[in-house]
Amino acid sequence: MLKKLLGLIFAAAMLPAFSAGADFSKIINESCIKKADISISVVNVETGKEEYQLHAKRKFYPGSVQKIITYKVAENTLGEDYRFKTSLYKNSDNEYLIKLGADPLLTGENLKTLVTKIQPGVKAIYIDDSIIDTEEWGSGWDEEDNLNPALAHFSAYNLDGNLVKVSFVPTVEGAPVNITQEKFYPLSFINEVVTGDKNKINLTRKNYIAPDMIIASGEVDTLISRNIPVTNPKRYFKLSLERILNEEKIDYSGVYRFKKLSPEFKEIAIISHGMEDVQKAVLKNSNNVAAETLFKVAASRKAENGTGTFDIGLAMLNDYCQFLKIKTDDIKIVDASGVSDDNLLTADFVTEFLANPANAGIKQLLPTPGQGTLVNRMTYMTGKLYAKTGLVTQTNSIAGYVDTKNGNTYAFCILINDKDAKNSDKKMLEEYLVREIFTKL
Image (cartoon, rainbow, N blue to C red; front, side):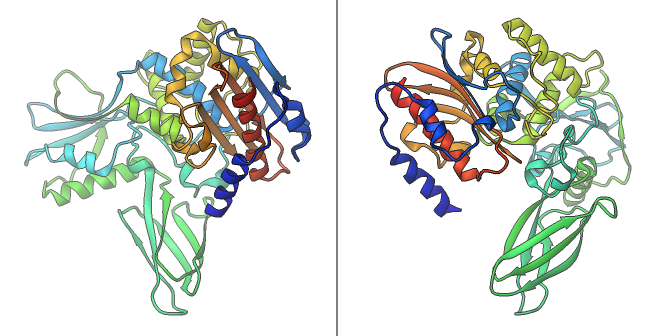
């Protein structure tokens, strides 16, 4: 993998210089990507003029560049100073209530900090999880990806990214490995992994038989760890809460019932993460759990009952685009992360969104080469390129801003839906096109 990345960087550095004036058509024609599967829009941010377009009004699968849109809409609703809060409350009867904020960055250590504030003799512990709905899987997400740590379930009960770290520990040659978990969650394994002379394991889960049973096969010669998505975040949260109570020697054998926060409860402790932290998770690290829950949390501000849903979030998105005077008739958004193949965007919609003066602040939120998903890409444009990438099934995409050598700023969007082409070839075409913007416009 490292060798391939270094090859991409080297190849980008050796890109040939073209004649004066950008020649995007030449680059596309000389690539091995089908022209019909490429959509491009390049717009001068200062003038609003479209410098180049190819199939810019055709609907394409966007991948994670869609997070630019849903993040900005959510931030516009919540505000830059919003904090994701998980709070502990207490009433005069020594009853406690945990008010969940669907914080995508909440950790077990954070939860422990709250739990240590619970006093002996606790009569009841309630949980208010009403901030977002109970849909824990994105619309159109593929169940075959249920072991992909990037596609963990998400809910008001987000904890540790809704992942459990599992390690495969070699023993003696030819013997089964030992399987250990960093934190308890009732996973069971059919262990077909043996100790050998190479590291290669395969994990499968058959939801229709037993969703928490994993078939592990292969062999290892050194310790290998994998992050396994939990199938029930609510269960994982409650098991973690129970474990921490036991560790802290807080005697409580009751259940954790739902209760809506009421004035009788007074806040005694709080854990929070700011929008800046979640923005980094969504736009720089392309975290899907963070993108999905952020969107629903923002929707909770628009909901009459205070519970955020994706449908309310979609109405919020349409209202924001209407405010910007950007039409949404030709797009289809079914999740907040861009994972689903049911999403459809046009390149000119993305650049119109990016170039709108009301969204000027997006530029500084996006990673520049050396950061996030651009950590090993186009490093010769560090501080000049600010972009979000996308990679899902047949889609490679990139969108953002380029500050050119001539002192101009361009918003751009490149969507490539060629399912037959290699990812490396699609990335290379992206880099040739972005470099052409940088050097010639």
